[in-house]
Amino acid sequence: MAKRKKYTLELEPELDFNMIGICSHHSDYRLAWGINQHLGLHLIKCEENFELMNKKGEVISSHSMYIFQDEDDRVDYYLIKNKHQGKYAVPENTSIDFFLFLCNNHIVDPAEIIKQLKEVNSIQGAYAFQPEELNSAENFVFS
Image 1 (cartoon, one colour):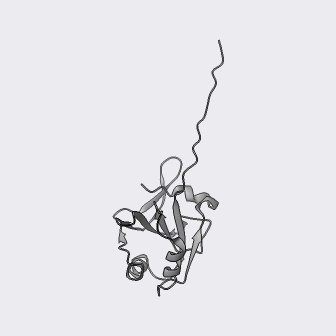
Image 2 (cartoon, rainbow, N blue to C red):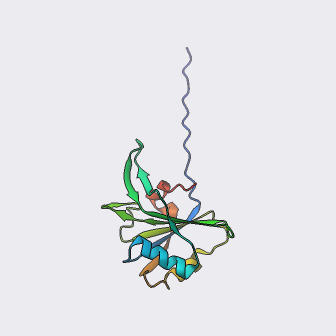
């Protein structure tokens, strides 16, 4: 009897988003309000939190999330709190309080967004991150 060959298909996750880290001493709703006022966005709190799961499909942490879908530029914005109950969405960057994700972005310049974010009173700092450089970036799949 001939031996059967076993093949394994491994797919690399496509990290098709811009990622901006935000340092702020304010709460998530206060930060979202400030961003909305200054950048002209309409971030609203999602009914369900952003949940990180282990390989067994069990929720290991839950983080507040705000979303805005810009119909004109066709960009989706997600604001996610990094730390909740001692657990981090992006454990590589524990000094970052929030992450702003720009998905399906082909128009908006992330450098311009960072410049505008730095002008918001409740933001102490805003920094660009390359998702490819973070192991935890593959946890962020937006549909």
